[in-house]
Length: 165
Image (cartoon, rainbow, N blue to C red; front, side, top):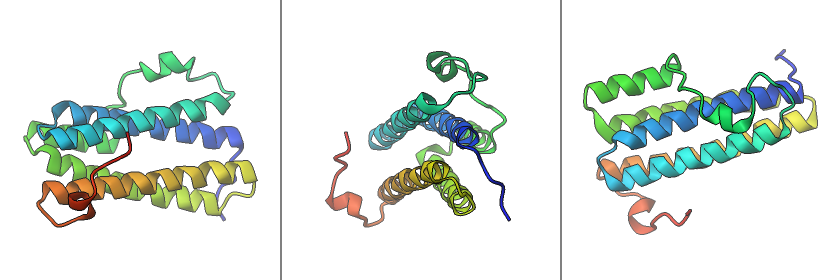
């Protein structure tokens, strides 16, 4: 049987995960050479920041401080995905590797949040995790389309440009 999360525990987990994702996308965008990939990564970073704010608005804990201070905190350089991104940057692997890492990270998040949602009884907590799953699935699809474009694969992104802004 899984762990039962309180609303505040779920929000805390979501806030931390979304901030880590925001930092990942911002860093990947900062080194992207492909302008289209850069735009996608910047958009994803901005969406993650919006998610942090949404969750933060409902969080009653104090360990993060205020939203502005929390958003300005340094990157968690021990986050495994961020470590892999920095390694890829140092090896000059570019957008392809960043997109591959993002796909892996988003897929892991989908699995983790789906599992957490399945084991939660509190409807508010369940809704928090289910919302994160839905948004993460959207990110996965967007990253997958951009990866296909970077790799020169035929994909929906070749026919239908992004209209998310």
